[in-house]
Image 1: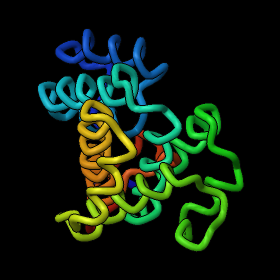
Image 2: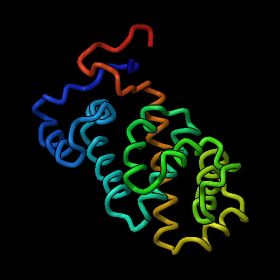
Image 3: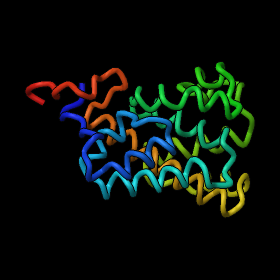
Length: 182
């Protein structure tokens, strides 16, 4: 259960934004129900993540692979549950999704995927990317895709940290009060 109550998506002052969220995401997900406590933040978040997910040249399989890896590294089950079906639609196999926790010893990832995963791990775990890892991803991707990959990794680290700090869970009843003592 989330640490604070979810915002009421029926409030008149956020109605246009809620309608946009529904158009772009299909429904008001728990993440957005929490973000709606701050209309400007929810709007900026929606725009930024829409650009990441729908307007970039970075192949969807690489995008979803790093999102799933970040969810694993940061212990963010909500993010993993939301993106697993997307990852499969983008071309990751169920075996690859399952192997992301131990990708280094898995033979399921090609050279580009392994290079991208190493970059994701370095950005997530160490912040500063070692030169050899950067050189590998630099060889694998053009400038645009490298910038988009870097932004995607940064963005989804932000997402998972937000979700986990507030203990957002997709099983939560968004109308129930937050649990006491949090």
